[in-house]
Image (cartoon, rainbow, N blue to C red):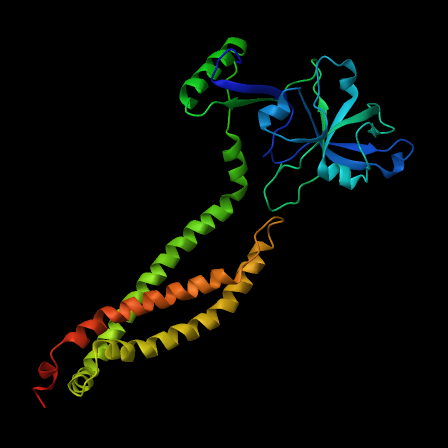
Length: 314
């Protein structure tokens, strides 16, 4: 695959981010097998980290030219913290102490935390070990150059058929795989957007109808005010004042409820934004603007109308 210039990186592994579950292995410090810790674990080759764009914070990556790397281990920040390792590079750990596959491994690198699961969960400890040639390779991760997706996929499928003619290729994109964890939130967002737009439309239509009714009832009052010298701005202020007061009252009632509901919903995520006051202030300004615009359209017509028309029947 790497012979194709559109294929930037490719690697083998037994795990990739976005899976529903991962294998675990017990890790402990030498002499403390009774204090072992179950840690997410999978195996990678020496090109996995650059293919996935993962950042090494300390130590080095695996190298197929260093035989001892078979017993090497790369931990994420969460694993280092969970095991209480100080200056972890070079430290020895015991994998599956007391089991048939017990193995003494050495930490050679620390990778920056990355999300294996959705943002609902805290980043969990992870241990990465070098993939041996005799171990089954579950996944091929491929980084493709931008703008060349269709031709690159065709090339990948062609190469796959050359090696596995009787097995159909199954592939997915990493961003889509991670987005699957947020399907419920995506659907909820779409539903809320729809009902928000519907509620705004109904509210504006109701407000528009109410304005027409009130202007019709106060038509003579508006005419008299204009005759005694009221300006168009005075009429607009008169008609907008009560509506804007009600809008402000609704804002102060709705804001605490919205804050409570949003705060409660955000607690479902281990990683989330903090609600800022300006979000609610912006919503209040938008509500006032919509109400003022809806009222002012009809109020302006009444304010510029000839007052004689409204008083001629008197």
